[in-house]
Image (cartoon, rainbow over all chains, first blue to last red; front, side):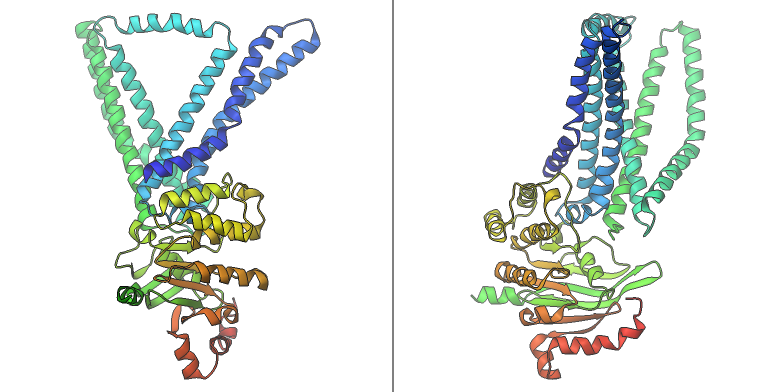
Length: 268
Length: 248
């Protein structure tokens, strides 16, 4: 059933981004050829290239605004608005509805980032070859001194993935809480989001302070004792702690949302 | 044949002491209700009497404050949603969809959805499946939802005000579409306040007054006992509430 839900969520994603993704790439390519005209004595050519750059930057900003709106709206309108009358009468479990929205949100964000990177490669002549020069050196540097660059990359990507999902689930939980009220649901969703964030900050202050102090001590000790030798172990440990901690928080947001949609659904 | 007889008399829906409150307002209060297969049931009451609330509880779109619901012996969940075909009182389409996307969706999710029948119904009701829902008229969109709901061989059809807000000619084709397409082993529940239009098709009538079931009987028994039509009885039962229910 999850696969079937994803099929329709991806179709709606395709419709939403059908214009903006290609537009960003086409404008980047256009700017590649007009970029050289900035500073040109011909006022018309300079004006044209200036406008082209302005449009490209605007499209890039719009891309991320649209992606954020997409993440919020597909959940709010799709599950808690009128479309919810269709989605919540399908013979599926609430967790499948939420997971489908989250996977789609993740895909939309990832592709948007990829499109932005690709557009820069298209825009700046030599960017790609620059990258080809850069990466081998980067990896070579990472591979030095017994330090596992591949592991670090995996950890960073995992941290990005887990924190994105936790971020989506925080938005979902806030909207789920907001929809419990009869009136002012959007405003109350915003209030719920801020409240969750405040609680989170308060709850995390003590453990983070303790962990921070501990990590600081460890790093200091390692730096002093082994002259930067084993400091990486602390960094890896810290990253895993971050991944695990974010995963626990994200899971709490997810199960909170799931509970509300399963036991407290309130479509009026 | 005997198997079918058994099936059509089987208990399908049981509501026990069902209560729904919205804050301080009570929408349904202590409703006990049993529905059998093979019946067309009218859920009758003025606006605000709790008809939509009852139907949404049966669909799982809202949760009861107190009481229990069983459909086909199951509590409301994915299992009952596979049995229920629901026509809501509003449009539930996403902007981007064509009618054909919805037909795809229904065939993907409901095993009892008959795609061929749906295509035939589209043709006879003049719906173009490749048209985007956004560009359709309100009446056409309502036809699309009716097609989706009635092209299923469901156990329980919950039709929330299917004939409100349309002209009498449209009422006829909506009722006709329902009557010629529903699964005869299932139960059809139609909520409305326009009783005279549907009285002749009903087997049973439920009168809902201020969140309580004040009458649930077969239409024949009502007519025999009262010596008048359900519509006439309805007008009398609800006339006295005209003043009390001034807000409606």
